[in-house]
Length: 409
Image (cartoon, rainbow, N blue to C red; front, top):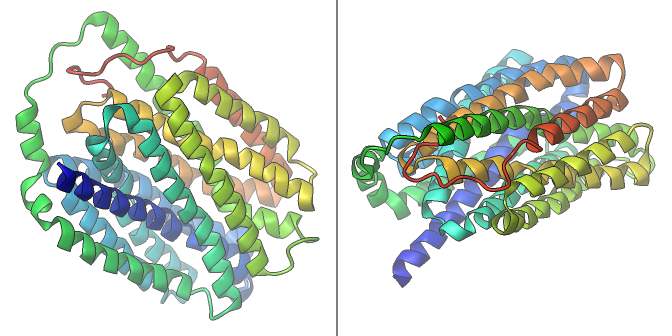
């Protein structure tokens, strides 16, 4: 028993490291574009952003096949492919000399990055104690947000010291080494714990009563709607914040390194909200927690236009607490509702919605920034948070018991 618990803790550490690297490597370009390439390649920020779009499309589209393969082959095997594949792709991207080469490299990064969320979350929920799922998802979310924060910090540092290419190379090499260690630790699991074997042992699902089917359809619609709108909020804040800080914090941040540090601090502090939210989910369920997160975003997105320096920094921290705090909620609901043998595939569908929306948001950021500036973007985000609040109001106060029925389909 003790040995199994220790092994699960080691596995949880690897899953968290994967979440950190996944978000770090997909967001290095956001800071590179804002602080380096606009000068080095003589292109505007708005002109550079579209080259990240193929990577985020891949981040979404390939989530479903990644989840499908994990359920039918091996979740542990897919995690090993993730670590080594995204590491090699990041190192290759560092050699980009033109915007087209950069876009191609980011596309390959996105293909491997797509593996993490459906596979890592399925592994996490599978190994979680049923009563503590929210807390584990929250802790895992903190690691992902620290990856978001570190992308700005590490890249800002290398822009000033050694060049932006190192921001791709060094995390890429670290990911490859972690992948090799993961294979060494969990090789036996990759060979024996395949999705197909899980499915065979699960047995056929019981018929779903008509009233439960109606409730599950309603829950699915709410989950995927809020997933899509939350994706707009998440992408807009995490991708654009370094540029927002460069424009708004001129009185307190005069270098790329300081911009990176301030973005890191905001992301890192805000990420703690996920642990709090995870605990609240286990205690009170998703509806009330989700309503609170949406309300925080409405208030502070609406407050942000026109602010600069310390006021802008503090309000940015406040809306990021709400934006990051909402991230674990849909994952929690899917983890509670999905059949275990289909969980990675269903997470794959969820992340197709999320990351296709992320990709579509990049042109929106560029268009709004070029035409009206970031004040208009914050007004759009306040409206998006309002739409989330309305949808969440329709959630039941308690989720139905998912077993043995398939829930989100």
